Image (tube, rainbow, N blue to C red):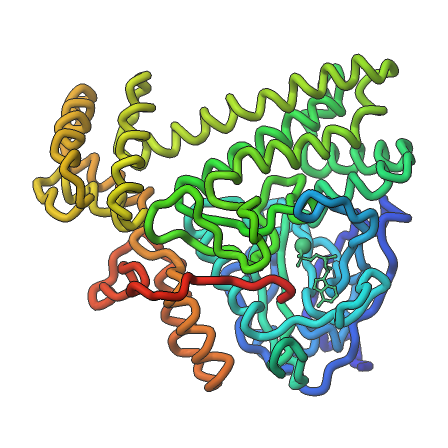
Length: 492
Ligand code: AMP
Ligand code: MG
């Protein structure tokens, strides 16, 4: 579509990826769509990006976020990457239905990617149609915003548009495009792309770019590539510990879905667990539970080992020595992860000091919760009521009373007033998460009936997940018991 550029909203693009990494992408254009309509615009995020939300709440906004109009300064491109999917290596994946428009340095001086997802086929589409359906687009929008509000590093949603076209999945569905904002879309799989072809100079070029963009401190280290790797290990250990602390299951932790920045990416079959059970899997295609809740830390470490393999030629001239050094750095994941995890769990229990016994205290609570089938989110939220005196119906287990005594004694050791502890706990233990049945209700109202009210209501609640809002008890409860286990689907 040709539009006079002087009437277009100003995106201050500064496209370092396109400038610096020739060969890592294919310049490409979105497929024109019939009738774009803006369904959601993230005003706060738009302002963060230096954009004017009022200007984007228009037909022009819909045209831009559908890909029909390329804003001035954008250099749309499809990124190349490879990846291990469920353990098997695919040398060529890439953006099969996404386009990077460019980067904006935001008002906080952070460089952010602006990407369209669902904008039509690219040279990386293989057998896919390059499209996205409204339900999964809204799902990614909602869960990403919830994660952000929960303090978890994540890509975010700037806009959702429908295209006025039908996409064909098992049934015909309304087509949609998500505009996604990320620290970058560089993945473990991006490193694997050239490394798998033995092109170490290309891997080095990418590593240099990533150091400059994400981990400038590593550039000052004695061995910058090792420092880069250690930084990514730390970022991923932090991220996965955060997931575990809120009962989040990503569902498809392939190496092409693991960012180098340490942000959560690609909300496909992800979901939050209700009843605490370490083996929980929601994804319909994860039949062996590779990406089950409790497997997430070891899988993150496995994925990092795949990243390490790509860096072998950069670490030391002696391959054996390189492998030794990287192995040590991979093995550091466990300690880093454990450190972040116990810190998150201490905060959930209102503890500020560090005692070795905190490990047993936490694990004993979790074992009790598992046996009782206790709701993960609800249990932690109720614990703050328990220290204020109401310890009924926190966990339905005989051992709970004696656990409570241990926890109280541990809290007394810190000597803080129960009211203070309870208030702090309520700032880390959410009351509202995107409960699976509530997400499904909101998505079917939107997709089947064009009614966005339930979605907007849920989005509001999960955007302030720690603040109780009267009249929303139904959003604090796990799904009613069902004979059919909850399942989520990929290929969105
Ligand atoms: P995902 O599992 O969504 O992270 O995607 C894995 C790979 O499949 C990536 O290369 C995607 O670009 C590609 N892909 C997923 N869905 C589609 C689609 N509908 N059309 C084209 N490529 C797709
Ligand atoms: Mg992906």
